[in-house]
Image 1 (tube, rainbow, N blue to C red):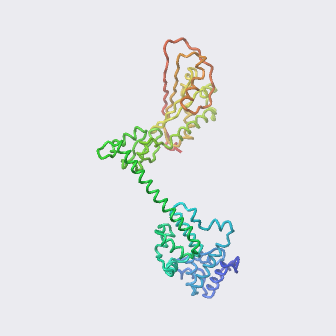
Image 2 (cartoon, one colour; image 1 turned 30 degrees about the vertical axis):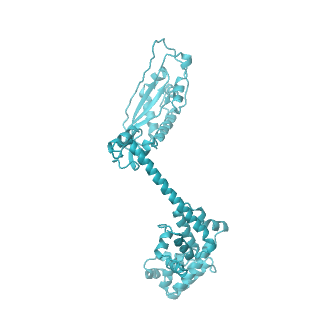
Image 3 (cartoon, rainbow, N blue to C red; image 1 turned 90 degrees about the horizontal axis):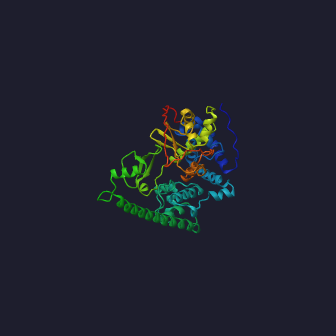
Length: 426
């Protein structure tokens, strides 16, 4: 003996009335849900049981298949289903009902208009497309079933006001309520025309721009010229050039990331790498972590020297990560020339930079013959003048230097390649 069914939550409601009718029909036919599923051939026993539970509104085709399998009156079940559908819409609160109502005056495009028409049809009890065709034809208007289906699914917007009016008639919209739909359709048509005109104007402007930079007699940019423009902008092509305004897969020379851009944006200097700022920020985060000496492996002298230096914008070219560090005085330079702190920097970088790399640390220093009293904060002024984000700085006292008759400028690069591991790009 099967498990008894749960009681219907509200037997007198439209949804409960539908569930009661389905349960009576099944019991009269003497069928279990498994046997009922075999008769429907495509609906599971669980779906059929939920349809008769009174807690959920089943799909209309499920309710109709349930009725056919039990030998019930399908038209009567369909009528009960429409009543339950309208009742489920009516159970919403007043505020939510107003929000759920289609607002054609708020739609932004034709797809939105199709969505509003779909909601309108559901609010009318979701009549079949055949019924919508009959309703429209009864008033002397033409609305084919296929057209109504394409409108509801968003594949096609009403092509004319006659088509829109036929759809509204099929959904039993009163004549006084159709004006707002016509106004929305006309507004969206004007928007579509303006969008097409704007697209034509942009294509004409791009054609003129391409003719200016083109290297061929036809006014088109060749493959070789496009690659040269791309490389001057700091990118390498990853596929063959197709068109001046077509998306193009490129690789950033600065950080090695791949993305898509348009040659027209490159010419207009609007093409930027989305990952370069992220790389620089990740390196600065790793540098800030290094200054806290989390592992305790750095000596106090090294930590003081690192805090007196400034990390400059990093570059990741292919698999080489160049991290330039600006040093303000010779004492700090002598301390940081030792590679003892490189493993700690590499460990911090691998926690922030999500790709394999070889690390190159570049120590950059620049001295002149200005008096010490004027040159004490020179590294801070240089960093701010370059628009850099400074690391925490400790202004060291000026270093006394011997008199010099000429500028003494040097750039020292201390390079220690660190082999990336296969799983270090996490």
